[in-house]
Amino acid sequence: MKTLIINIKELLQVRKSSILKISGAEMAILPTIKNAYLVIQNGLIADYGSMENLPEDLNPEKCIDVDGKMVLPAWCDSHTHIVYAGNREQEFVDRINGLSYEEIANRGGGILNSAQKLNETNEEELYNQSKVRLEEIMRLGTGAVEIKSGYGLTLEGELKILRVIKKLSKDYSITIKATFLGAHAIPQEFKENRKGYIDLIIDKMLPEIAKNKLAQFIDVFCETGYFTVLETEQIMKAGIQFGLKPKIHVNQFNSIGGIQAGIKHNALSVDHLEVMKPEDIEALKNTETMPVALPSCSYFLEIPYTPAREMMSAGLPLALATDFNPGSTPSGNMNFVISTACIKMKMTPEEVINAATINGAYAMGISETHGSITIGKKANLIITKPISSYYQLPYAFGSNLIDTVFIEGEVIA
Image (tube, rainbow, N blue to C red; front, side):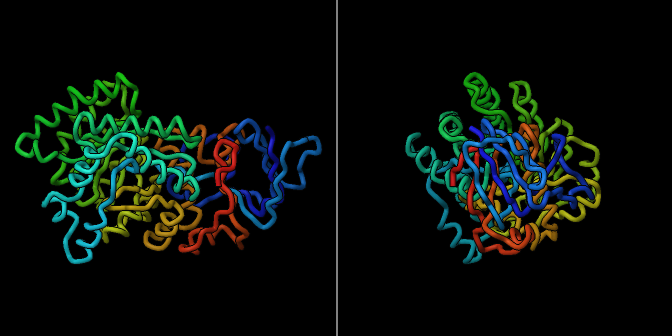
């Protein structure tokens, strides 16, 4: 089927060639075409250009006039944990009453709380809870998403999460990438036997995950009180041997060398980065590793924001993602993420759109097929409501400015 979209007020993130990522000063440049058209065929972007150059012989089955509206690539959210059971509302109130994230975790809350709930929830119910969240983020404009395990912390719990992710990927048109995050926390029963849990990850979990093709990436929470740099490297190496590429949590609360470990093992991305030392920024220069910021996590936990300006001034790329999870970011709204990045991290509208589209795609290994308006890429698109300029997208942080979402050429919202 051929669909023609006409009278686009401004077509954003137009890239003639399929670039993989945007870095440094180039992040401030967002190529656009005003008064544009776009052609979708067989779920892909088939053509685009200025209305004055609209071919006369297109003969589309469907024509959509979007006068006054803008079109841009759907968001690419490269860091989420949306397959979880229940919620952690009580911990939200505990934090209001003065407890820190670390204090809640130390008394059995946090990740361990979510793990207990998940292991008490059957697979069908877990799927039903998770699909509601997936459908929500699709309506909010996300066209590709990475989903991590990590709330099982047992062999069966981790496999259950990854099977749910696989089923979601089959049942929905959105592109989903799966990440194994068994190294999210040390379970209570292994508190005095860290090596025993790491052995379980390496000797039991990884072989099962590889055998059943349940994940593409491996992740580790490299942080004080969670996994050391040496443990992170050990787990990353094991994951690589099973064909999983590293994407790791680093520098959320402390800078302990996790970034350097990730780079050493060719991590696709290093995520969080709320606490960055000059040597961390220096280490990321001229690497293939994508730094990923999670501003709504900083907002929710009231912790520092990733120093985006310092990083881009050093020539680095940057991606933005939601970190959608029950404890530190119970939201998968990428529109809020880009607004928060502008307001709190002083990124420009151009920079946040680049970070949430093409660079987000890179952080999932899919920038050859997602993240820009490029012929041959997936027709994953956001059509805005009538807006004055694309600056309004981050500016009007409390408004829903999305009119229609296309995923693989089909309207889903």
